[in-house]
Image (cartoon, rainbow, N blue to C red; front, side):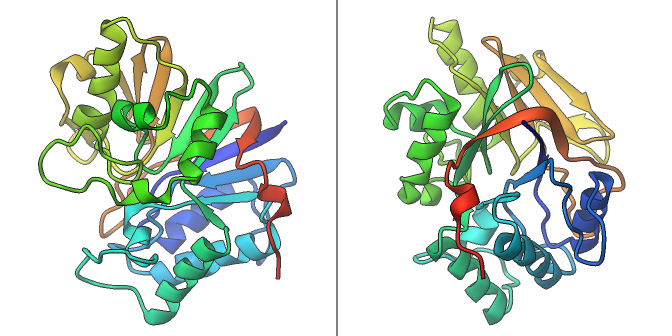
Length: 280
């Protein structure tokens, strides 16, 4: 068992990331993680903030030296720099930073999905933006979070799906919007008699605007949602499962308050080969 710490979108804010790691026990000049801590970071390491280079350098240290303790997922902003990626952000990272992201992907240091089992026995799928009902069906309707994670990690084509301005209920795990594309279709699936097989944790989007505490979601989703305004977590219960959005929405200047999602006594179910990844 371990304490699994799930960190939302960083968006170029190296100091915000360092602060979060210190709060979960990282120590020393290299911010060494405690032996019992495993970090899962949901992607979008770069863009918007002032120090994408600093973020990547910090994460690269963990991926090189403690690949068993740091699970790096890919976000849509990171995916711009992967093979066949389509740039969309007007301020690209440096060539060296882009090369680092590409190398993580090609060396298997960066994944699409992870899965954990909480101390209460609840299985959770972790992705950047969430697994939609449409993509779940395309994967063959996996019944466990671990099998869904393994299937997603074998389907890199899905990371390109989505990103249009219109609602896309087949959006992939890097682009799904929490309200209309992710949660509401799962609610409809359950209402029609379908089974919701596991809970989910994701970044990328939120049902609320944290700065002014306003909602931006379908009404039926809002009725089932609760918000931790200080931690910047949004939870929606669907069919006995919980979908938790943890994107702190740092924007240009960083969130004034936020926290990672901390799961004490949890078990990492996937990727199963994390401890065996190459080190330099």
